[in-house]
Image (tube, rainbow, N blue to C red; front, top):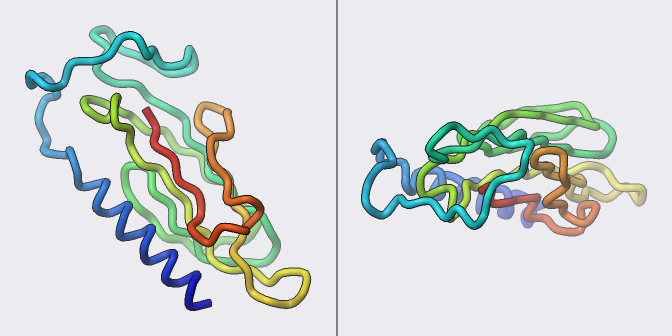
Length: 150
């Protein structure tokens, strides 16, 4: 249990730090914000003229039975007490430097009771534009799921 709480705190702190980086509020037109056109986004992404941003559909899933607390990050961080299985879909706009370095999305599920009666991390999955990009190996990783969306 202590490892799960420590893992949740670590991921939450990392997400908070990464969410604060690069959010200086500029207009994205500074000299260092040139876009690499060799890595075009998938056709499912919307891309306005000028190529300065893309919008992705991000889906978080936490599997299992019962209820647990879930911390998820996609631009903002939120914590919810949820009934399982749980799914959350949101849209994330990636712009400026995030197009190269990525914007962190993550989901950290709390513990659920396993088949042996012991607490274990719930299983989680992240999908971007319908494609699975991260999972925690059916709860074998206490760190949850994370991915850099570009």
